[in-house]
Image (cartoon, rainbow, N blue to C red; front, side, top):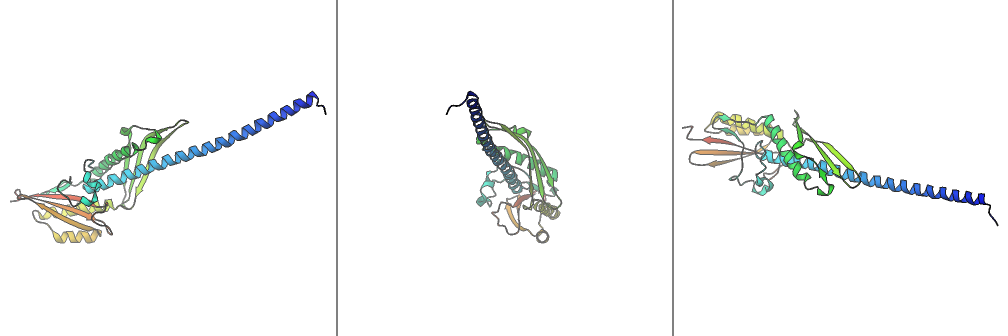
Length: 262
């Protein structure tokens, strides 16, 4: 059977169209699959960045609570809860020296949270090397919202660029709300203890402590470090259903120079 040249041309055109159609469908299918893989990677990066932000907040929170409201990045004792009873080398926030109160304000707490979260977030991001992150840690901005219901809302802003072989993705805003730590309640209790105790210098008011404990429904551990002429009283506030070695404790100290009080 012989084919005319027109028929042959028609077959060639049809075959070419089929080839183009198959190639197009294959390309679209692979592109969709690549896009899904890419989105999965972006979600993974976003999840890890959010984890870093949350972890940075809690690391700062525990450090600040151990020091009565101050962030101390040099205090390595906080990383070993079994050593919490070792008072000798701890950096305390003294809420009073004799009758003189020096209580941290909410603005002081905000400043220390900003320092702590920024420091910890940079440290956490530096461990995510596989994502090729680009950012300037000095551009980190933290906003703290201490709420009346004792919740703490933290918002962080930092431009983070993720470089990959195929694209660039950026992240900027991070938000977390802490409704479980009781940090603000412990802070309020610490201030009330200090305000009461300075009224009885050079003595202390045990009944006042009992009353305050009952009011806040927290445990309280009191330790005195006495020398010949001075006494440092260390207070550790312990939430309910928590042990002394728990990371959610709050510590501060009062100092009394007995020579001044003679």
